[in-house]
Image (cartoon, rainbow, N blue to C red; front, side):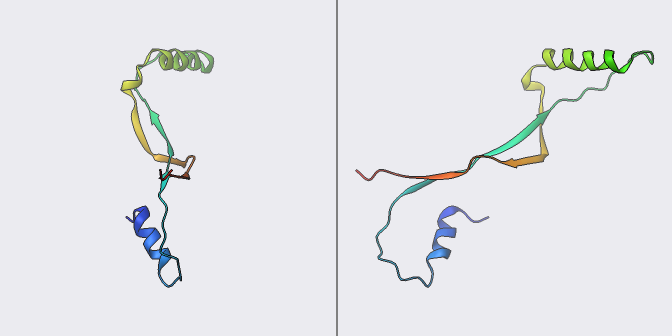
Amino acid sequence: MNNAQTIVNERKQGKHLSGKTKQVTIHLAALTRVEYSETVEVPVEFDKELMEEIVLETYDAVDGGEYNDDMDFWEKGNCYYEEKNNG
């Protein structure tokens, strides 16, 4: 994996530059999903509407600490840089 400084060094090669530098901070963000699943037995007579109600009630009842990372979902978030003040 290349870090930002390695990438900068690669981009500098073969270019005529002044030699002066400035500091920047690169911020990267990714949106991931967490999920919770639980297998339960329900009567076969429970219809779609009742099951959807149970899903919503379960969502409200489950503590966030019970969720697991879903590593199949990964979306680029807000990525940007900012110049650091020198002084």
